[in-house]
Length: 309
Image (cartoon, rainbow, N blue to C red):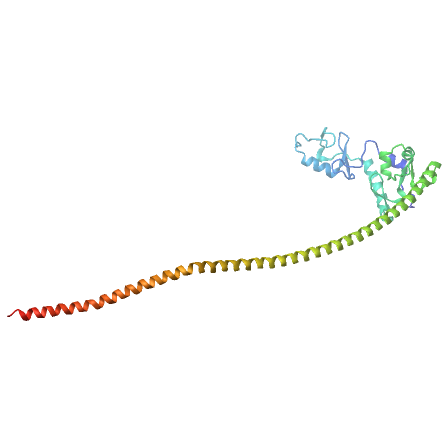
């Protein structure tokens, strides 16, 4: 199979997809696996539908009814839960999986779809010419075949290479391109000029900052030295004041003592005189008492001797 044969034909792919079918399961939101159809017409994965029936709270063996997860309509559950298969969709899915598997083993994805962001091979990219002509701008939306079929049905779609080959630039687009090139050049020059101005301003600011730091560093040193000098002078002055205060208090103390000292001396001398006087009186009193005792004894002896006569 050649590289061009790997790209699905849009009309063939459109015939593979019925208006009533969707490739995504409404329950798991993934690509359908073994699609099964309810009587209301909605399609689900076989496993998703089986789990839904199993967990359906109102389902019983007697009623054998469930509500469709998509529309809510009541559906009968067949015997053995064997819902009808959608063979056409199953065959289409298998065919698409086979093509995708072959593409996956042959090439590596390089691009993303502008609409769904799915990884798409470069040779599969398509452009909706109908929408592109309506937009009439320079932005090209590159789409995967699935998005073209789903969202651009009935439009003219081309491969990217065929689109650019069949769509030459108009004069207005050429002028726009030239204008954009000129604008880009001008923007580049402006950007370079702005960057240069920013660098120069940065250098000037750095120089100014360094000078300011140096200036304030010198002022700070002067202030620090001035504070140290003032502190030393204040300390010396305080010491002098304290010394003067101590000398003054000592002088006043001595003056007070010298003023009271004569009176104290006089009082002490008076006290000493009184003590001497009292001592002398004691001494004279002690000397007189023995003489009185001797005289009394003599008188007693004389009276006894004169008594017999």
